[in-house]
Length: 187
Image (cartoon, rainbow, N blue to C red; front, side, top):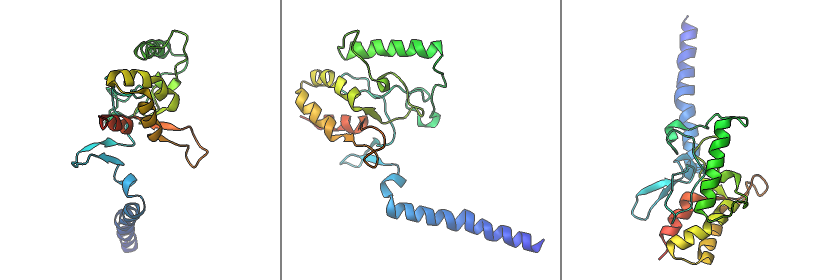
């Protein structure tokens, strides 16, 4: 009995105390930004958001993110998808409505293709990035709403585009929050 109690106490100290402290220390030394939430902090010290979490933007002067199925939208406490499958009539109707709305707000014709990420929610509902094509289709609307040249907006999109992971995995993505904050810095 004594051996079991001692073993339990030793393992509790190692597994519940030392190991978490070591992992915490390593993460703070090697991955400080990621370990602390990849926060975007304004020059006055105000936290504006995280590079890792999407936020809702609906004003025409901002780039719009992917739709979110997390809670009431972009709710990190209710992260998750809609759980609607590819044969779901409800999902099909929602996507058709989103396609029509996207085309209308971005002055596209009824035959212009719409990027999938513009009308479908991500698995977490918190995806902070949109595809480069999605961002390109929104440039005209944002430029018009802000009375800026499309070339200037396009330049900001390029500056806020992340490349492929390790140079080969995934597609380039545009961080919507960082891009919108950069737009607010203009003029």
